[in-house]
Every structure is written in structure tokens, then in C-alpha cells.
Length: 467
Ligand code: FAD
Image (cartoon, protein in one colour):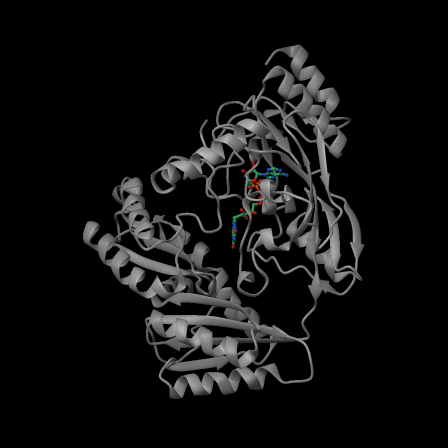
């Protein structure tokens, strides 16, 4: 990049909109788990859509690649500039433009954190249901670009289902304004969907219109021991029927995962007296005069009689609810503190999960004697975090087999009709891996879209799909 180009880009980014200071750029170059490290000579921090547009017009003309970044909490390396690209932080594009309690919508700029969206919704007594452990840092632009999932997908859908409109800057700097926020609009292709889950490869998301919901007045949280993963599926169907579809979260946990949490996370305790191989954390939310606690209690008691659960506890207070959620949400952190692990963010047809668990755990255990399976995840969505901790004392040799273990698991996922990336995306981590599992036609269409919308390949090149 020559000095003239850098000067033009700095000017386009506006006052306080650029930095060449390595100390300021450094935190943007490494992701949360320190798995990926990049480098960039220039950080651009525009504060308006027009500034983003001016920056892209210059980059496109100069054929200079650029990597968008929101909160830098992505887990597949998508937000990291690996080849000295310009880094485009959307963090200063952070205005809440409009909250509409009647239409149940909020319009926010890309750099508003997910937590900020929750607060904007709460200010008009509404709920924005997307919920991730990273919500204090991740941004709505990143959430859209990764089509983030989280714990409420079962009831409300993933990010794609929660978006009514998008404003995006195209590779050549044109602003595509799709923010009318209509719930019904059948005037041709649904273009906003192109930018959701695209990981910054098709355009830069600068704003979004999001759906809001009534705040539920009742919340019931239960923790149940189950005899098998198959019993969890029967239990989920029973609880959804009994509550009229009010189950908002249904999280599977293995005993191995719970043990790691109890060992590494302070002030946690086992909620049930007897140990079980599997547990589920269930949450139901709703409003109205009926008693949700009683409904769930009755359904759990029937499930106990039917042998679908062996024990259960219903939280009696907010503190108890939070304590149960802490067990689930601390699982990644506990596994990190235990040592090396190899992870898989996968989804499967619901009915095939129990068989998949048997087959895939056996395959990895055969390949790595002593490996410790720690599966958990959003079972209601068919999404497992299918993780393995290293055999004790063997962190380095285990990590050296990362690709081999991934291959074993992903091949089985494919055989079972599943996906090798349920919520975290593709980035660089799975870019070459998806080529193995997607059909040539699917890959052709993806590449055609990329070439059409970004003919000079300046937008996050080398992520998601190689052209
Ligand atoms: P970044 O990490 O900055 O970027 C992610 C991708 O989006 C990159 O490819 C980047 O180039 C692109 N991008 C960012 N902003 C824009 C924009 N405005 N326009 C175009 N492209 C853009 N994910 C889940 O789905 N479910 C979970 O439950 C979950 N839990 C997590 C828990 C923890 C502790 C952590 C660290 C991460 C978790 N994640 C989860 C992953 C991550 O938080 C999500 O992928 C999140 O949506 C990323 O948002 P971000 O703003 O940090 O994006």
C-alpha cells in the first residue's frame, strides 16, 4: 500500500477514524482463544455508513483487500487479516437509530453490541431474544455476518430469523438500503439474506432492522438427569407439548462436562444428589395467567414415571436459575482450564443424535485411547459442541492430531446428514473442509455469487470460499 492510498483511506474514514499505531491495532489481530494471529498496517474506524462507502469505493478502485471486524469474538478466524489487509472496524458505527414498540422493531447500526440491542429493546419493554455468552462484546454486524445462534434458537430461531432489514455497503461503495423493515415483501429476491451468514465476503453490514418480542413474565428453569441422550429427545417433545411450545432452551450436558465445571469454576455445585451420565437444562418462558412452574413440574413428574428422567430440580429463585445457567455457560471455560481440547460445532437431524453420539465417540476413542469426550450443546436445535479433552498429560501430541480428529468427526457428521458448522461459520477454519462435503453445484453457486458481488475479491478474501 503506498502512502497516497493510505492518506486517501484515512481521509475517507473521517476524524479519529484511522490508526497506524501497532499498539492500537494489536488487540484486533488476535482472536479470543489466541488460535489465530494476523497483521495489518492500517486500522480504519469509520463512524458513518457514508464513510464506509467512501472507504470501499477507494479499496475497490485500488483492488486493495479489506477485512471487516465487529467485536472480534468470532471463532473461525473470519475477522482476522492474515495477509496484511486493511482492517475495517465497525465498532464506532454504534447508534441505535430507532426503536418502535408498536411495530416490534429496532433499527441499529452494525457496531452496537448485542448487549446494547438488549438494552434498547428493554427500554420499550421488549425482548430481543438472541443470546450468546459473548453478548457484552459481539456486535450486531458480526451476529448477522455469522448468522449467530445461541441458547434461544429453539423458540425464536437464529439471527437469520430475527432480521427484517439490512443496510449494506457493496464492494464498489454503493449503499444497498433494505431497511424498510416490512414483515411482508414479496417483490423478488430476498437480498438481505445474502449478507446474513456471509462473514463479510459479499458486503459490509452497516445497519439492521431487528424483530422484537414481548418480554415473558414467567420463566421456569429446570435441571434434569436423564438415562440416555435418546431419552432427552422424548423429554423435549413431551415438555413442548405440555407447555404449548414454550420451551425456549433445551441444553444437553454430559457428566464429564459437569465434572470439569465443578472442578474449575468457583462457587458451582452439583444440583442433583445422584450422578448421571447425561443432564438437560430446560428453560420455558411465557406470559399469561396460567402457572408455568406448575405446568413444567407436572410434565417432569410424568416424565419421571415414564422413565425419561431419573431426577430433576426446578429453580425456586432467580439466583438458582442463574446458578443452573452458570453450569452450562461455564462449560467452554472449564474445558479451557482443564487443558487442550479439540472442538466441533456440528448439527445433526434431531432423531439421529443418540446414534451419532455412540458412533462418533467410539471412533475418536479408538483413534486416541484415553481421550475424554465432553459433548454438550443446544440439543433442541440439533446443535452439538462435540468436544474432546486431551488424554491426561498429553496436550501437545493430542493437539498435533487436530486435523485428523476433525476429519474423523466431520466424515461421520456427513454420513449422518449433518453440518460441520452449526453456528460459528466457516472463516478460514473450515474453508477447505466444506469443499469436501458440499456438492460441486452448491460450491459453484457460492463462487458465482462472490464473483458477482465482489468482482475484485477485496471483501474478506480467502474466507468462506476460495475463488
Ligand atoms: P467478529 O468476530 O468481529 O466477526 C465475525 C465475522 O463477521 C468475520 O468474518 C467478520 O469479517 C464479519 N463481520 C463482522 N462485522 C461485520 C460487518 N459489519 N459486516 C460484514 N461482516 C462483518 N456464536 C454463536 O453462534 N452462538 C454462541 O452461543 C456463541 N457463543 C460464544 C461464546 C463466546 C465466549 C465467544 C468468544 C464466542 C461465541 N460465539 C457464539 C461466536 C461469536 O460471538 C459470534 O460469531 C458473533 O456473532 C461474532 O460477532 P462479532 O461482532 O464479535 O464478530
